[in-house]
Image (tube, rainbow, N blue to C red; front, side, top):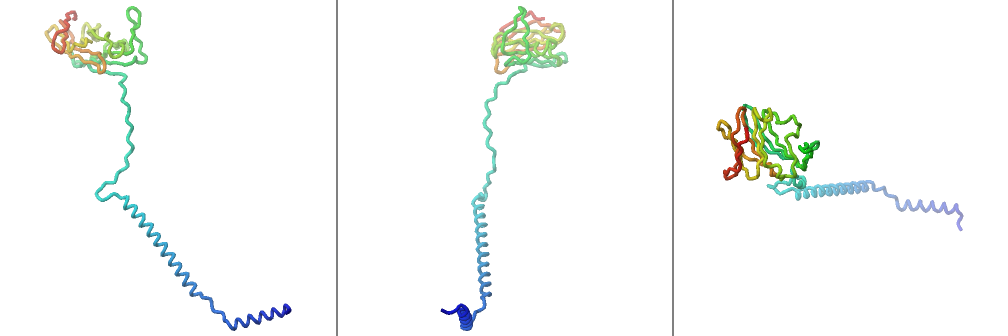
Length: 256
């Protein structure tokens, strides 16, 4: 067995002989750098191709999504509003019966129907002390010169309770109304709430004047009226009512 120090010397001698027989070549630095540059160029080229493909894909997508020439791209429209329910009937319905000028003053008569009794309304007592029954209210608003007749009695003084839209008790009345002395002088209004067959009324004055007034009905109800002015100083000789065929239905000579 060779001693340890002898093996070390032998190894050194063998290494020296090998170095002399196969001299070491220089490291291929140039080749390594060239290869690295080539790989780097390939990676850049690949990235450029991928980027171009992505842009091309986006362009194609936009082209497919774009409307053809000559067409208009649809605009965004809000969703249609759901159909609303039928509007309920109004709580109050009114209609102008007649209007005009008498003695230089504007006058008018309007029927006003309330489907339910207004809040705060208190029906007046009847002569026998009872309270009139009804679910609705019918008002006869009469104005002369901008002043409501019987306004001193409050906002409901010219109203009466009725039951629904077809109360027969609200028909068949007639009255002469004014702002002074309960309608016996000054400018006055003759107002009739006739039966259904009455189409118009004619008020004959003492000077021979005939004032014709057409019946008007509150929409959705059977409540109707006609109205005619009576100038100051005039008296009434007759009040007649006619149907649509011009047949006289009533003749009244009791008014003054």
